Length: 230
Image (cartoon, rainbow, N blue to C red):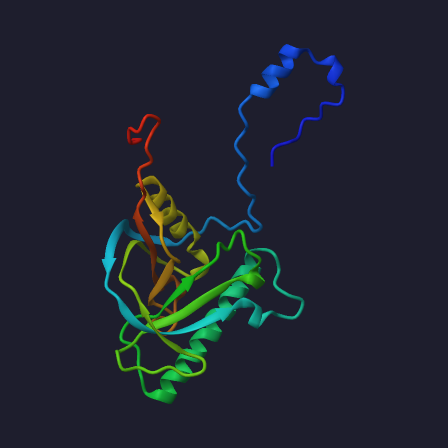
């Protein structure tokens, strides 16, 4: 927040100075400072960012809250706390999904994915949520822990990276910067698709994850006088 200037000795200020102060344009508000600083990340980025079209799909989903897995003493307010929160939600969600698979005999028709709903740098770890999911056939039925949902078709910025999930911050930064720099805006929760994970390879350096950020072309604002801004 900008500092507030105290004018305790009004009589000592000339009328001209007061006019100049009153006419001074307001300073833009400073952006909110993040609660948690993230490391730069060192994952290997595969290919270039690009916008793709994805069809609608039916998915088995488990909605998770980090607060459901709060450790003794709570989550720490740092990157380790974030990793603990996300790791607990992923473990809990996939455990529910796998129990559902074994009980129903319904198997995934594609790679698992997760949807994220909060900015981890601006949200306390205990308040984070995530939806863990994988695509299924049209006749799948849920239970008390797993819902069957229709994931709508989307236009998404995509970027893939190799490496452990803890090392992927640089890939996320690259994807988000591309969205801003190329005239797009977010229109939904971002997604990670786990093309290769611990069920596929033992070495985390070989994990392959695809980031998908639902986007649309940003609206062009009209400049003063009605001329579209460029």
